[in-house]
Amino acid sequence: MDFKKIVKKGKIRFDASGLTAEEEIHIRREVIGNQTKTSLKAIANPSFDIKTVSSKNCENLIGKVEIPLGVVGPLKINGDFAKGDFYIPLATTEGALVASTNRGCKAITESGGTSVFIEKLGITRAPVFITRNIKEARKLLEWINTHFKDICRIAGKTDEHLKLLSITPYIAGRNVFLRFSFDTGDAMGMNMATLACEIIAKDYIEKEFGAKCLSLSGNVCTDKKPAWINKIEGRGFSVTSDVVIPKATVKNVLKSTAGKVEEVYKRKIIIGSSVSGSMGFNAHHANIVAAIFLATGQDPAHVVEGSQGSTFVEKLTDGDLYFSVASPSLVVGSIGGGTQLATQKEALSILGVSGGGSPPGINSKKLAEIISSTILAGEVSLLSALASGDLVKAHEKLGRGKNV
Ligand code: NAP
Image (cartoon, rainbow, N blue to C red; front, side, top):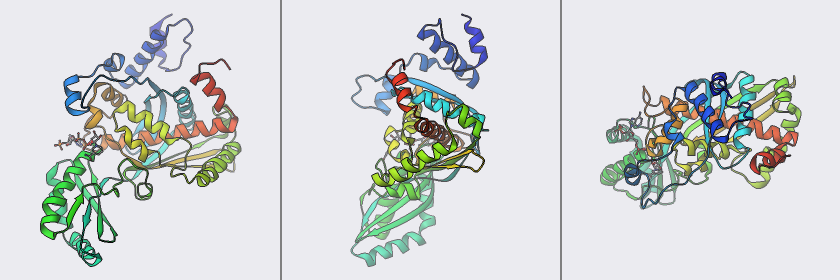
């Protein structure tokens, strides 16, 4: 078997007969390494720096757990920040997820790629203040309005990459929740936002206005909990993407028809989600979000926000299939937190977004557009598999290793 020949073909799926599992992985790493100009040394031999990890990422360290890492692509993306063909690393233990998402990537790329853009951004923190009564609560809101510029200046001093965008107030009896929204450049920004809120709340609002800040997080943020506020107002990046898949691609790649997929969409996503009172009108956004988050060092608890997206499907008059996803709350960054770990850094490099961008913010925006596009690929493939009745077969074969 001529390894170099297979690598030269540049495909992540190839005829692996006669190859050992190790050889197959080696070839795939070479293909991805060459195409994305990324060294995958750490991913090939994962081992983190214990001193850094125990001081920055995890206390009472006893070791690590392993999660398999796969890759999908190429996925053609036509975004404002992500432009071109991308390979996307997915960390998962769910057999069939990578293969299915890869099929979605193929269908989308054959269709000319995703259109994607960021509608809104801002990481939020909402401290809760106690006032004497609603009269004083109203005064606090007026005071915040007239002092907004000062508050922006104070926030900016806490970190050169942080900018206060807005403060949205919510009054509940004597309680005032101030939902601060920040642009934090390439960082996901929760530490930066919390630090800025502490200084604004304790050193400025408490001292100058006199209302007590009872908790820096008042749950209107809303961090790591399912909440309508994130779905409606957004948190992190609010991103949307779409694609029109031609009839022939629906038939040849997705093994279905636009009518059948739309029917499953209506009965599952629209009716089923409303019967269950679901907060995410989608098939499995969380699957893609979790797999990319784990691969690239995002905070895994933010999968909660990422699961609250919506999917929109329509059969067009000519038999083509319209697909779109909206993710109102992708809480992601390319610097800080778990993104500093060697393997996660390499996974970000595969996407071309490791570390701080120039100008700051372009890497995290590109990452958000890539994630939205990959969510779209996941939705395209799963809803088509349900429409063609292939879901159980694929899971039996790829999840349980059975010959079906
Ligand atoms: P961080 O690692 O605390 O801060 C990122 C740092 O990167 C910034 O302080 C900034 O410092 C630096 N930086 C350099 N280049 C940058 C660029 N281009 N754009 C933005 N920053 C740049 O990260 P974080 O995102 O604020 O916080 C992430 C962590 O917060 C995760 O580990 C997450 O699990 C955790 N978290 C915290 C809370 C909380 O309430 N505290 C809640 C949820 C999650 P300079 O500007 O000085 O260069």
